[in-house]
Image 1 (cartoon, one colour):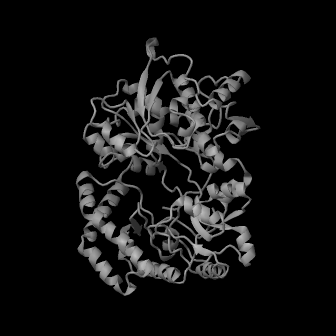
Image 2 (tube, rainbow, N blue to C red):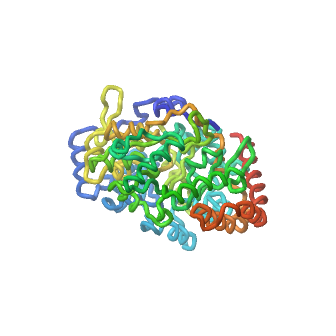
Image 3 (cartoon, rainbow, N blue to C red):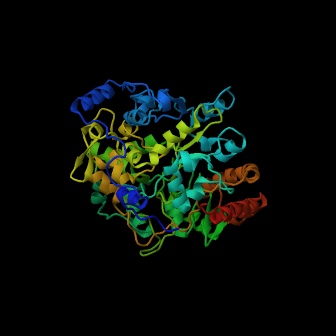
Length: 544
């Protein structure tokens, strides 16, 4: 699959038969007093609940419970998404009152597991892909409702995007075509967000241009060593896809397999994996890689970079750019490295799949839901024209205003006491079941300065890159999942340990063939066959 071209949310909405502006229902009031009241409410860290109780058909109040993790940054300023102004507006418009239930920060998985030991489940549950065996196993166990037959009537907008985007349909259904969850849908891919980060002042001091090939990186590393700078901090697991990609390999701690011409492969079984390890072993031996790479935490690495003690590492470019701006550091990024100039790469570290998977974005309706139709209406809202605008941008007048035909964030989003990242979880829905716009168009953290946005777009349109090696995120059936857990887990542990040993020299690279033979003897070829079966089944699915 080729990398998705970055186009506008307006165009994406048009492709789905939606218009760029205007609401099907009455627009929210834009009185100055309402804006002032809302700003004051959030400023006191306790946004008001909707003034009137939500009413359903016949005037009866519709109340539902919704279990969902809360963003850690937002939780410093609000205690519940009931204080989120976009959710408040949605509840008012839909006539549905939601009681949000949040697990403790850092205990999401434990508290999610405990839900299924209680007497009654919440009506709506996020995090459903963390169910043992995945959300479809939860459906098979009778915990989550099968929504397939109900979607066309009660969630027509979600059904529309499901059936009109073949890839999203494949990602959101099991092999029998069942739909159990409302999933975040991103029809327009983002440019890559993770890059090699460099301090422009350090580059100037060294007399270096931004490196693009391995020889250029190594020349820069030599100059850094001469200045007493540790050149590079490798990912603590030893996996760096931006280096593997040069060897037509793809693997990290979460994504273990890739494909080549439709055939599933496991990188450590390939000859090229030895080439990858050889490069990193060379870099480690020459002092290019920090000796502490396997133990350094993210905050520690940030500090080392900010203080000039390390030369480069890979991290989200915009966050580092903004942090640098606050400290007077000009942060720049490098493109994906190549073995030589003009090399074509067959992977891409960006959103190439339309389904987004974060803690809040796989949402199901439980077996104990008291009003399934209302729950589906509420979850469907994020795929309507009105809901797309509200959830991606926030409330008009409070969070953004029109400038000509463009939506532009105002000071409520860009100049507040929380920061633009946290504001995205307090004033709008950054991650949720919805149609999600490209972050370069709707994410306030990118739009607060032209430099931040440009830092993300730099190197975004590379003609010599595609993503043909990356496997789609398919699910195996129940029996195959169990086999994978039993057989593959010890193999992964062995590969993780040996990869670090090869890089650091604790294990000589002469033993690479023995390493591969051991992986095969542990049953990896059977696991690859299961992955191939899952991929083939995924590709064969078609929307009904």
